[in-house]
Image (cartoon, rainbow, N blue to C red; front, side):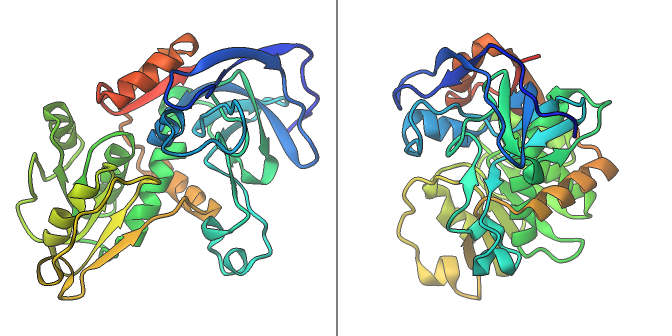
Length: 328
């Protein structure tokens, strides 16, 4: 991937100074990669709700003044285009890693949480955890694939749909959902979207959803994915499942779940499951699928100087699709 000799000088980076308050920009030295690492000059970084949870204090920062951002498109010093995603490293030795479930590794570390992320001009990443990316696709279109796309793909794979012809419910329709819905359609499934946003419902229909409603799907579901971090949606989503259906909760944070009624919500072998991070194989599989069926990526671009405002817009529901910082 080329030389990792860092440039001399400083760079700009956004940091979580005080959780619950806007991000702060600071100047710091360009990081120096260690053994097995690469230095990536950032072109673009998409925003994720996990960044918002970190900034707002729902996820306690794991290092002081951490720089968020884990949907990074950039170039290593040799010029190769790479993507830096949420999963930064795992131990490779525990029983979870050895059985192909590195997303459950107790010693896993994450970009923009355990280590500085992509709301910066440069970021350091493990060479064996970055993804090669095409050089001829705009960075703004690629960045949302690296978490919104990958975690949505894992949720889709864990939702237990039949090989094709399944009926999938999607609750919430932001950055991840709008990519996952397209992946499901590409795989031959019928998608029903439930979201309060009229703009999101229109987008869902434009992207191939069979229906888009503010309250409930029009038919029983084989599976559903909850993207909105709202625990109150769990009971109605379970109730909308057909017998044997699965509800996968795709977020890292969820508000409290109300009491469930066994007969209405769980009986007839309905399944409620969480989705935790992703494996590198999830990333490789999703990026191959996106290469075969390029998704229509709805983005709202922000300049690097607008990162704090972009997070506020995301918090206030003012982003349709994915917000992306353009840094180059």
